[in-house]
View 1 (cartoon, one colour):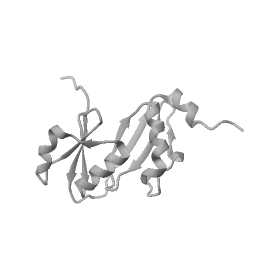
View 2: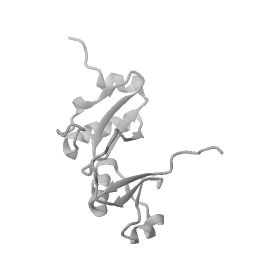
View 3: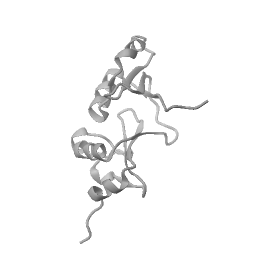
Length: 145
C-alpha cells in the first residue's frame, strides 16, 4: 500500500453552520458540493474543501470536550500565502492557544519552517506552516539595530 496523501481530518464542532462560516473566513475553506449529501444526516460530516476542491476537514456536530492532548492540524502553505494570512490575522479575531488574541508576533521560527498556531472556537488547534524558510526569513526576521 502506498498512501497518496491525507484526505481529510474529522473535527468536532458544536454548530456545523457556524463552523462553515468561521473556517471560510479564516482558512478560505468552503463546503464540498460533491459531498454535501453527507451533511443531510445531522450526525454526518459537513465536508470543507480548499478552493481547488480538495476535501480537508469533515465537521461533525458534537458536544465538544476540551482536548486531552496536543492534537494539531497543520496546513502547509507557500511563503506568499503565509504572508497573506499574517496580513489578515488582526481582522480575523483568532485565538492563540493560551486564549489571547493571535497576532503577527506569534509566528514561530522552527529553523527550517515558519509556523503560527491558533485555536478554532471549539478548541481544535491548527497550524499554518511554510517551508519556504529563506523567502519568509526576509519578511519575518527583524533587522538588527
